Image (cartoon, helix red, strand yellow):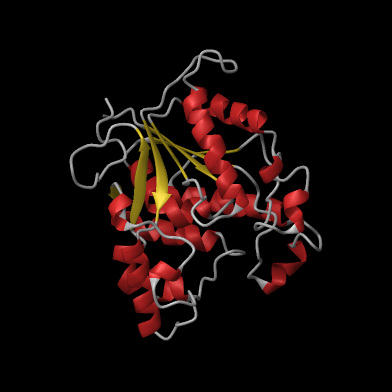
Length: 288
């Protein structure tokens, strides 16, 4: 199938690259239409570049504007030309981690009027008409309120876009909905390699079962091999310089662990027909 259209819904700039960068690059390179919807500007992110610390939310509060530029550069590295912010840039703000005062802001995405947010995403779905939609699981991967809200909005929009009684525009029913996944076995391999390389405190645990995130291997339905596009993913990671330490363990280990941990990305099929008994290798498997 040549007319393939993939829509990804992520919470903050850099989320798209960490969890789905290789997948996005692979499908973009194959000629598929790849559309990224980001729900916030990531205004509450921790700044790792000392010279840009003045952009923080408790200072000049201009990190969000800066991260727009980072995201533009990351998308260019991945070959993605269609990117939108849900409701427009800055419509909803980064809510910060669960339980912090930023959760109470009326403009925080966590507090977004649900039907308004869903309607904004339904409009994108009906315009793009993707066969496949990707977002997070019910816990947002690791419990961040914006990831949880992105999940809720994406699932509601996946269903609402097909409902003739919801909003304006011609209804469209995507064929498959996936949640991003980090298999426990892959996380364990990463922990072991980090420990062997002298980075024992990177995760702070010796077992993946002790992490507050990770997907049991038997729940993972799909593995997309994007190893041919690993360098595109790493370049996109470098573009998110305020959030990802270029000289940190991720990049230090990318040469010897990257092919197995960073180049293959995993998913759980939440809606749609699963193809075969084993893991799918293509998000578009079974899509007519």
